[in-house]
Length: 523
Image (cartoon, rainbow, N blue to C red; front, side, top):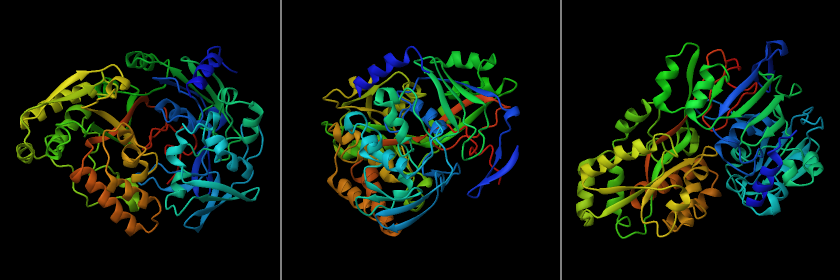
């Protein structure tokens, strides 16, 4: 992947070249060309690559949904329910297979027709495994269970999993399942040339991208979902928040990303501007190297969690705009959500007792910390240090420059983590961090053979009641029996924008400026 990035940087451095309608039961306002404007967005970072399978960076996910569609999509409600997209309907063949009926008359940005051939290619190893089929792509976190795609006809396919998979529909609506043009990929001749100007079916098509400067899109007015709301979108790369704020205030951009809570009042005090955004499907936590002499003790790890007053933390740092989940899960997990799982407890007295019972004698616990890699990271750490001190935990901050320093062995420390649910299920959330191929086990920081076995069983379990029993056991391991982390709170994505820009956020890292954004749909 490093060689691809280096080549790509050299290529991109020079730049490259209202009526009401209804689609499959989802009405929306079709934008009139004469009313549309170019939307200017101040974004904090340039995407690693504008290709859905390669990266899950926030910058990539903000651009990709404008260019590509999935076969099935999540709506923008709290439940994240499935809706038709490039597949107008689907049906289960059995526990391992899904038949999808593809939308007819859909065009790619180059004018070529969308057919079953493009689905086969997009979901094949030739694409999903990335350059050289190295398998280092984000697609392997989402689509690892897919075996193959069979073509029934030009507009009907059967997606087959390697075994029973209750989550196949959700996988086809998630990261890396976007459909790309097989013809355009073949014509590009290489990954390096492809990522300069990828071709999808989305509401906008790429015009140019200039490394660390901007990405320019224009409306794709032949979009199957109706004309896009904007004539085009320019993502301007403005790394510093103060500079983004100034650009918004001066009218140079219409929308900025990565707004921190301490800036909310300033935005809300300016006429014509407002704060947008809110909680997303992401959990902030403090992960633990459970192999160390002190942190291996269950009582110490549980005390680290019980000492945290999460309500006070969220009030102090996030103006009460973030949720406190009951474990490593979200209500959007639907049938896989354990609603009665106990809330994350704040119990200083129990924390003190557990420390005493474990034989903890005030040994130092190192908290390896980055300088606000995450919003409010340093301030949050300082607050938690005092909460831990109040129950007798001796936690000391050690400032680090990057994750490579943090994860240099022996780690023997705690550090901050952020885990996104790439689709609504424990297997796309906690399992990503803590399954055998997750960050902590691969770093040798934590393992639990019972947890691993339950996760493998969950992958092939279809019945909802059976899945819930397994998930409950997995959550009990994570929060009671062998905790690998201290769950703090949900995460949020906050933006500032002009009030006359009609746009509503979803629950994911994705930005959606197409006609299916909730701001344009009609109830």
